[in-house]
Image 1: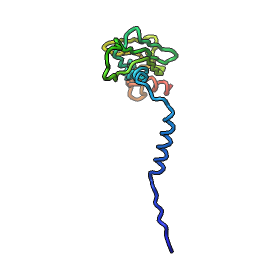
Image 2: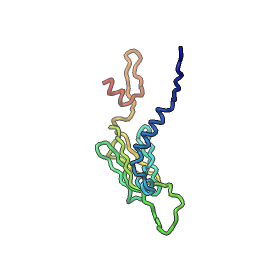
Image 3: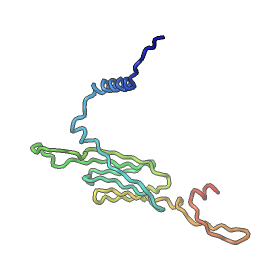
Image 4: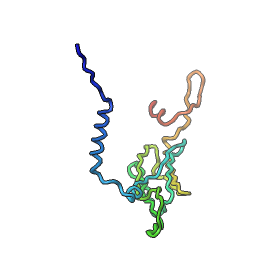
Length: 166
């Protein structure tokens, strides 16, 4: 009985996939240097809370006051604006431009616990800090509970616990 040895190439399928991807992207125009610098920027945002306030901090170095817009509508806070490249001189030869410029928009859905009428914002040192106070009815409060055999005892409860037990 004669056996044939069949050699198998495990990377054959991967090379085929690579060839297909190369053909797919070959027809696309590459991004120009200007496209990669302008319009590719979004400020980085941290959102955290304490017992009374939800706080949003956004890093926006180089953004001017007149180029910044902050709105709240239907419990969505939207931060938009533009960081412009200043003093761009055609006669100078830039060796490297790594900072991104252009328009940006970031939107975040706020929890219903935020009192949108009392929002405050401060821009200092390239950081926008937005304080979103919580509504009074959603803050944790102490509730007196009377026990039939031992008298009254005060316990901590938050608004969710009170609503669930009511």
